Length: 139
Image (cartoon, rainbow, N blue to C red; front, side, top):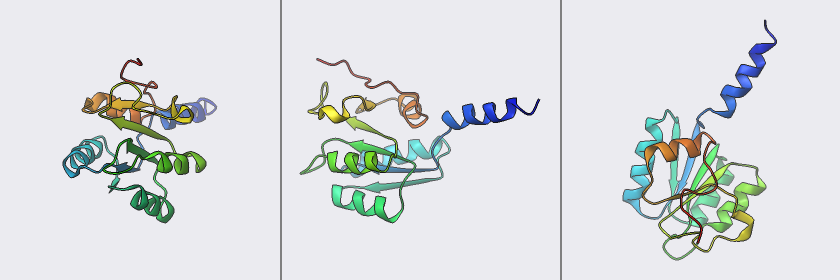
């Protein structure tokens, strides 16, 4: 009956791909690789910021549906961006080349985290909200 239709819609929505993704990554080649991979999942728009200031400007101009944050940017960490996303209730995950938690503040310890490099499957799972808190062991 029609009563099952809304349930299917909500299940589909929880497993859907975001339409607009913000990548915060300071290495242009890595950012391009993420962008190409994310677009291949069916994401309509991918925007890239290479600094905290630029990411915050982009969020204020047009909030993304999801953000992928490299923890360590050239001369700063992306935690100010994470704080802003959390305030706006925008889902996000971290990607890092650091071992273990990479100095992740306790406030973000439960956020999804992928190692660099990561598999396309792991990245897609993160975007669909199916990722665990970390793809790397804590130690």
